[in-house]
Image (cartoon, rainbow, N blue to C red; front, top):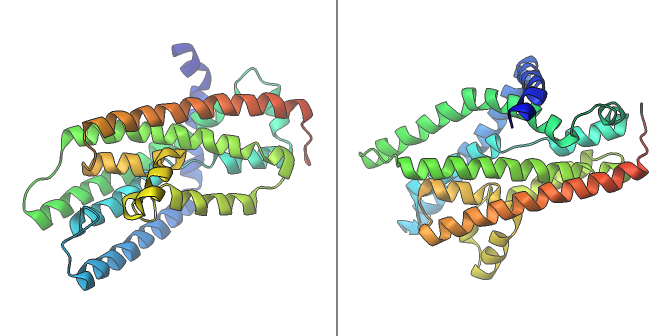
Length: 272
């Protein structure tokens, strides 16, 4: 493990520099997502106010507000642009340069993204997490921070990011065939955003649909970590959810290696 970190540490440093170089672009993207969070907040506030019910599918209005902002935070931390980055390297031919280097293609991208995540954690994760806890205290009058739920959330978040990363790498390899993934990436992000529970909690869907979507890897990317944080899972469900996340992580790690081995044998690029 130490040898791997020594080899790929420069990629982490490069990721930090890359995030710092395009910081204006980064802040505008985050600002747009934060505005979307507040739109969702006012939407659900109107739903609870007009409905006259204190709870909906087990969620109080406070729970829903926490879910909105923690799901946003989770999607930002667990976000990976691996499909875009891999697709671009295949399209312009730069992937050929990576292939001649004695490094693993997936690990090089992973460590580079970890550098970018360090910036995100520092500037977004800590302030927003504090903001959510202040909101809970302002509404309830008591300190609602649960250290156990937070630890479970962190472990689940790490698994969520790795699942998202390897899923996107697998998706990015389709550029070997499609050549350009710009439109396909946009469609993928919209579908995954809904199926992962990032738009509405999966618990709000019909039971049969919710059970089916919970089995898919997308729930492991957002819904499961957020439900860990808000404390909606009992002990058996927590164990099952971690097992499911680990299964999907192993599945996508193996799948990306299989796809990579198959694609490089018939690789053709437009650039380079």
